[in-house]
Image 1 (tube, rainbow, N blue to C red):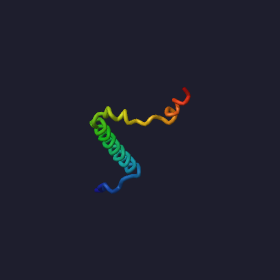
Image 2 (cartoon, rainbow, N blue to C red; image 1 turned 45 degrees about the vertical axis):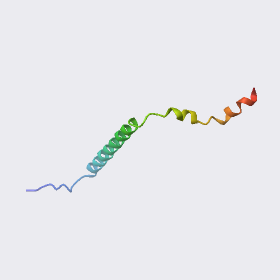
Image 3 (spheres, rainbow, N blue to C red; image 1 turned 30 degrees about the vertical axis):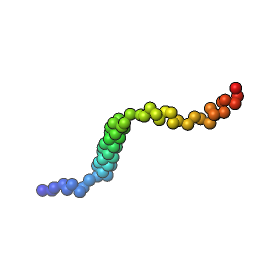
Image 4 (cartoon, rainbow, N blue to C red; image 1 turned 90 degrees about the horizontal axis):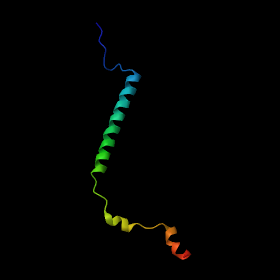
Length: 64
């Protein structure tokens, strides 16, 4: 009577297992990132007043 040992894994089995592990890690980290970003605080309305205009708009007054 012969028993198959779990140590006798083919290269294809290792590739499939590696892919499943990598895909699972990606899905968990992607989901965690999306949840974290969705729960972040709302945008501060004052932040829009602190925006620096483009340098071209600073020279627009000279042409008038």
